[in-house]
Image (cartoon, rainbow, N blue to C red; front, side, top):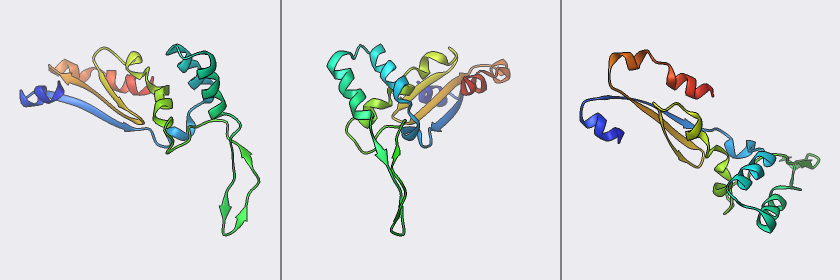
Length: 132
């Protein structure tokens, strides 16, 4: 859509986002709630909760180990379920303005809007969308 606008000589404002460390910050309770919103329930939801809970980590530096710590957020990276669990940003297109379009892939986001006239440049919808 926006490539046609560019081919037609129109301006397109675009913002490319990479949610840094996003997989580490996914809140388990919010994720499980969103899974419910996607009609995942019963034993499947319970298994997802079990998969995320009771995880621990520790650090090893130069052969010295820290104590074990509980992991209370995040999705295991490199797992088969990791990208599926990143639905935590799936509702982003619903909260941005109608002037903006959003494309999501895992922890990457592309937000863009067409600039049809000079007054579009004065609208701060993209900045407002980034702050929502």
